[in-house]
Amino acid sequence: MSQGGTLMLPEHNDSLLELCRPVRRILARVGDKWSVMIVMALKGGPRRFNDIKRAIGTISQRMLTLTLKSMERDGSVKRTVYPTKPPRVDYELTALGHSLREPVERLSLWAIEHEAAITKAQSRFDALDPQG
Amino acid sequence: MSQGGTLMLPEHNDSLLELCRPVRRILARVGDKWSVMIVMALKGGPRRFNDIKRAIGTISQRMLTLTLKSMERDGSVKRTVYPTKPPRVDYELTALGHSLREPVERLSLWAIEHEAAITKAQSRFDALDPQG
Image (cartoon, rainbow over all chains, first blue to last red):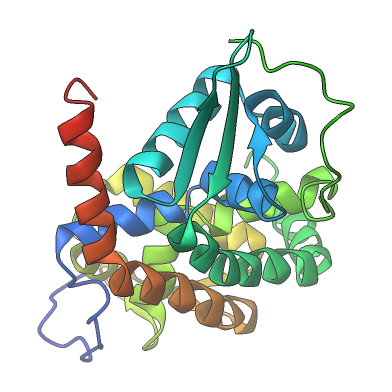
């Protein structure tokens, strides 16, 4: 579909969109559903891999490993190996990771608060457009 | 790696993780990077498809179409077709979509504020673990 010319479009403040690539990349990751779930799972303190996995419920082993590793790389999660047999591996939020809690909880609360409205909108949409 | 038993683990407050599936699904979508970008792109008012695409920069036509459609289905975006030749199609945030702005902006500001710390942590991590 043609959208016509662009010169007539009103001006918008795109400061957040015009950010350099690294910020977008960070945003893409912290907004990722698994990162959000991990932040929530670790907010009470250190937990082991399988305990995090169980808390999240639907995440695969591979995806949890990858997400924890990229959060460790970003400095928001700390991984500690205890030399027991078998070795015990704990994950916990760093100070940076804890600073993510507040914005992440805001987003979660928004989802909880608006769940009913969204479900209603979806039913309405699907009734008008049944093939989705 | 074995994580050992779970009965010894301290209790955590998982209320947000134990939420029913729909809330998780909503969270997965609103935390999605493209939804975040679209909310930011539309915060100033209605825009046409190609204008949104240009503002976001790195999104494919297909992904923008899909994301706008699921946001329309959720009731956070309204799509209006004007019967001009060629037809003009505008997208705008609904009241529900506008309510998403605040939590989404919080997350974006977090990313901007902590970009330097994250980049530093990544360099440190990569120096210790060069094969990633």
